[in-house]
Image (tube, rainbow, N blue to C red; front, side, top):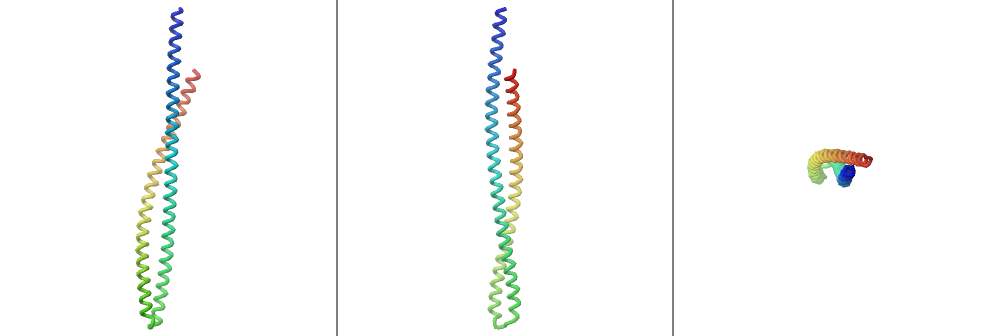
Length: 166
């Protein structure tokens, strides 16, 4: 009978040691998952900041494009005025032709700039949209991973609590 009690005590002691080891491993896993979750949150913040910076750059480029368009419209109006004055005075014809040619060059230059800026804007917008899609996908993946890890942490906490209750 005494040997059976000693054997039962040894088994209970071994079981207690095993549960303590399991508890320690689970606590270490919880710490690891918490660290990974913090890293994922940090990466998410960095990506959000990058998106905001790119949005600001796009806004600034659009504002610059609007200014060029306004300048272009003003220069077109100046050219129309010069064309009207050209017919009124033959004495000023050479002078007006020279000014008109300069304005045409300026308009051509601005048209070229406008075309180039439009191309840049379109490319940048496509790149930004692609980057946003990629970052949104990465964000969703990070969120899903964080939620999965959070769920694992809660499961481990539940297991630890239930093992402590036993």
